[in-house]
Length: 204
Image 1 (cartoon, rainbow, N blue to C red):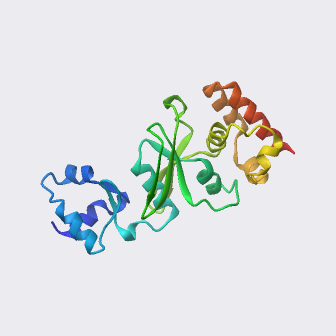
Image 2 (tube, rainbow, N blue to C red; image 1 turned 135 degrees about the vertical axis):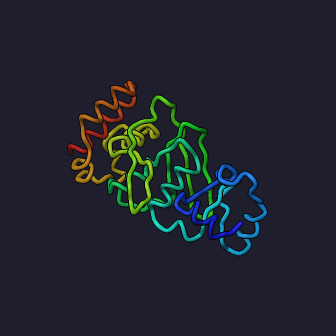
Image 3 (tube, rainbow, N blue to C red; image 1 turned 180 degrees about the horizontal axis):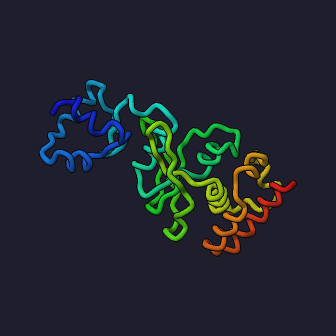
């Protein structure tokens, strides 16, 4: 197997598994992967997942990688909040929502965290496109509701101050009617109470 041929086939995927390779070339000799790793052509991310060292250079690349390593999933929580400039801090993990089991992995490409949610709540994300890279990320409204869902102690105005939420950015970017629609779909009085606290914080 010619490495350049192999790379041209999988480079844009950012991450690929042995299963992906077998679909493309059923007779592929997986000893090639070992040899290419020794030469520095490939890195093993985890288990059967691999990537090219020069393919993971941007934030979008990491978001796509997060989508690929565990699916179905979309980037959310603090990672999405920072993406939308809702919080000022850098986030050193790529945090995603999935309907699969929760997981946390340290890989050569970075730290990936997956929080599990029931299938009925797996909505409110969109596909973003950046420089020929597309990835699934929570829309601004769902990123806030996901934050409330996974943080039950966020109830009062004082609770939200610790997150240093950017009120101006949030108020400018979110659709409050969409928030209400999402809350109707989720049908959780508890989550509505948390949203009431966040909305009160935003209005001050």
